[in-house]
Amino acid sequence: MTPETSSPCSCGSGDACQDETQKARRGFLGVAAAGLAGIMLAPGVRLIEVAQAAPNPAATPAGASAGASPKVRWGMLVDTSKCTPGCNACVTACQTENGLPTQPGPTDAQWIRKIEIKEIKTGKAHSLPVMCQHCAEPPCVDVCPTGASFKRADGIVLVDKHICIGCRYCVMACPYKARSFVHEPQTQQKPDVPRGMGTVEGCTLCVHKVDKGESPACVQACAAAGYGAIAFGDLNDPNSEISKRVAQYSTRQLREDLRLDPGVRYMGL
Image 1 (cartoon, rainbow, N blue to C red):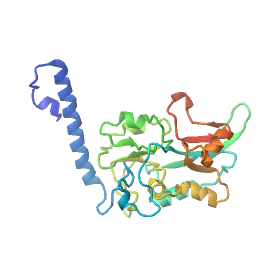
Image 2: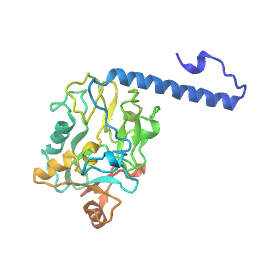
Image 3: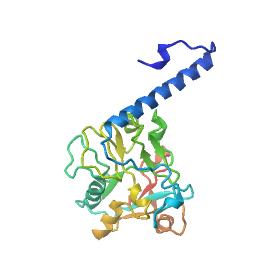
Image 4: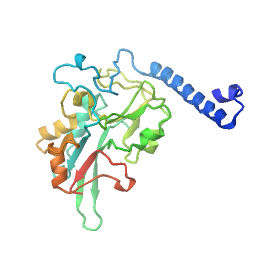
């Protein structure tokens, strides 16, 4: 049943009637989303308030950020010359940090994956991690009918599981295949990383850590493994390490032709 066909429009105007229909559809989706989210999300899991990132400074714990700032653009820089084939430290760290399956099956979510590529002309091979690219112009946000896919002021792209209805439009729109649909019931979830069957998810840049002033788990794991192939920081701060390296070295964004301005950049490609 759709609300726009259950009762005739009372305005008598074609354009206004169309507006009413669109508002009714959005209202219906919103109610449906709220209902579905209430059912699908595991009980006892605290849904992180990520949209504004600790908006009340008085309630902010010591060391945590005061809120997502539009002055900041969080990003990553992957040095493919340091990324070693066969090393999955970043993948394992992501799974552990976010409560994902350590031995993922065909339908399980995977927020970061390692890929191997080879240049046809030269035969030069690269190993690199691919995750949500946290685009400045994210197509996943554009196609979301409920507003569940959203971008924070600091550039981190997330999914609000309260209102995700699992339509998977964002999965199809993402050119990086960085989003997953949760097919199975979730148990033993981590309080900072809520998950729910019937919703879509992807890399959050470990936003729960970033808001505490920490780096994402994959960055920490890569450094601990001795490679240091992934740098994380504020792309808008010219004095940050990541900005200095982006300014000094040639870097690329995946699928630059799409003009999505990803927040993840790669060196050595």
